Image 1: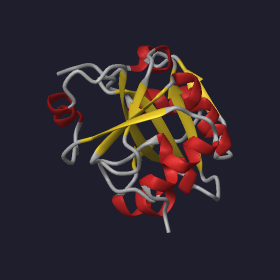
Image 2: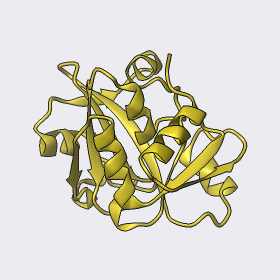
Image 3: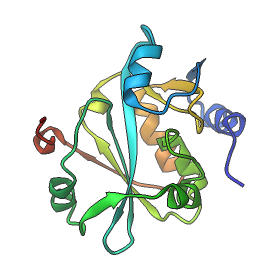
Image 4: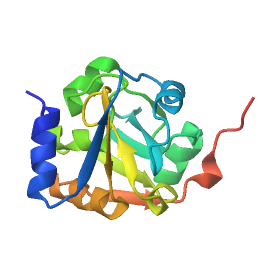
Length: 170
């Protein structure tokens, strides 16, 4: 069974990671998040689970307004062509549903199937806001603690400057 938000909070506490959680109605999109979050401080982020053409899984975590060119991202990472993971694969790999994708879900990836990519610009914001395994809350942690959490889950994150591969608008 995937971890619950309470199990996540207990894990953060055990790691000495300070966290603050704000409850809200379910959010499914970045646009909904912008409307409902009010003046919640810090970097607001989105997490994308991508599947490469050879079946590799990549969790890419970026600022919410970043529009990635997936072809350019795959080239930057030296990966085969990317597509978005299906809801079924998202549940199987990270134990979350669409709209709830988060770096915190790495605690459910006990087989370490997922590679992690972090937007360097995102890490310059503090705090960082992510869903705590469900889309009915937002949990803020310090940017430095994100790396500690990811490492404690047995993953190594690649930090990349992704500003150069934004997808053109229009």
